[in-house]
Length: 180
Image 1 (cartoon, rainbow, N blue to C red):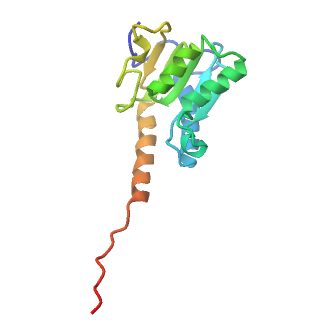
Image 2 (cartoon, rainbow, N blue to C red; image 1 turned 60 degrees about the horizontal axis):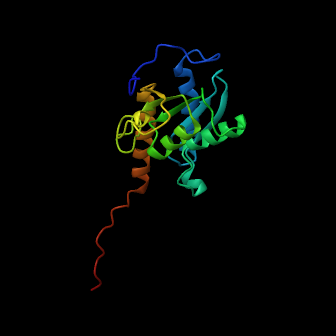
Image 3 (cartoon, rainbow, N blue to C red; image 1 turned 90 degrees about the vertical axis):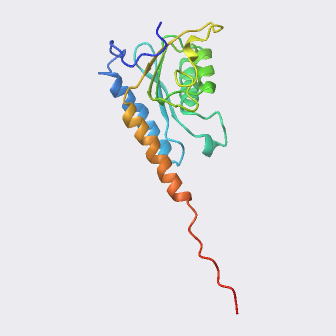
């Protein structure tokens, strides 16, 4: 199995016309995160028939929970909907390459495929910093497809952080005049 594919030949399961349309659903989740002033990452989880069984967006700040990543929330919802902690045959579609924490959840849930948009050069665990789907000690391998709508996913993140930096810039303070 190749570590990462930059394209995928087959269509997604179910009535989805393309992986782009599934990424649209993840981008909608990411936009909800941005509106809530959370880091704009969104995820959707589909079963082997192509039905959305889970979705989520980053909520770590509002929930005061460092584990409330989009992927984790989508996986939790999917497992609850399927009434099983393992969901083989499922596919996770996410706007940003998952981190190592999310990789652990993906492995434990036995997700069969991860499709992501933008690479995460700082903490990405599916190609950027680690080949998490090819760990020699792991008993679960899964397919990874990278780069679906990557420019749009990247732009959403860079625009969010640019805006945040501008909002947090402190105003220039003029030196106070000393009383005479």
